[in-house]
Length: 308
Image 1 (cartoon, one colour):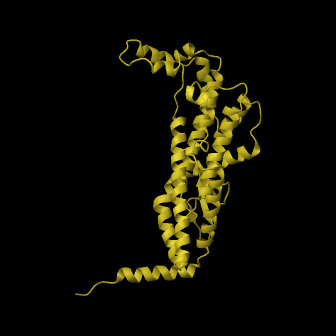
Image 2 (image 1 turned 120 degrees about the vertical axis):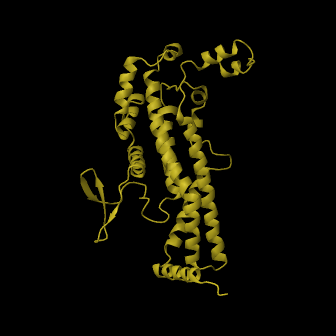
Image 3 (image 1 turned 90 degrees about the vertical axis):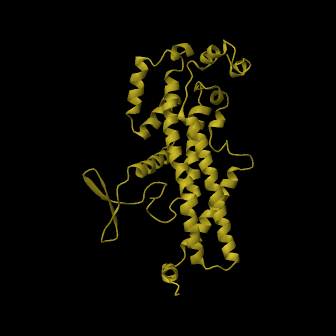
């Protein structure tokens, strides 16, 4: 029975509940579907605020505002309105990918299992496979999925991008306080070991500046997600079924960038990222001495008191 057939039945009909149960029997539900929407939401908010900050910078140039004032204005707006959507886009994408990989493997293992059999619950042999998969490191899960579904190695670009995304995610949730040493270098610990912090991967350290993340990083994350989904779900042959009418019949809707509102193209997103990079570079060029002088001016104004 299809969903279209069910909605023709009145909810008061005694056969309605049984029809719904049979329709849902053996299907999967997953956080992945909501995560995709949440990622799009974060990306759209990040794009909107990024665009506004670019316009602020353009307006201040027209008004001959001091660059140092522009720097502090943009830093404030970035902190309040842009940092969250950017970070949310990236972290939600890392979560969506791990959920997607597990769901793909589950669907692959139960590919030949009819809905009634799946509806009776997880079989012991499947539990063992799931347990083994869950114990793998994230990059090994990606490798296993490509080998199982495509009988291929993970493309190098995707593999490196995935490793960088997972490293960034881990650094957000399990980060160590960074020690600033007298030499000017940074040191971190891992267990009983210490090491000097060096930049690695495609994502910055969140403590490395006032505006560490850019719109380009958010695009980078969602396009990695979409590349993996295209490989494992859309171009997979024989086709893998997620046992969901919506995503099985229209798998392209699972692509984050594909589901953006009409009128927003990939070229538009790339242009926005380029424009922000240009603004970021310009305001980063404000000399430290100008920033110090501006802070002194603010401090003097704050300490003024009215005399009655």
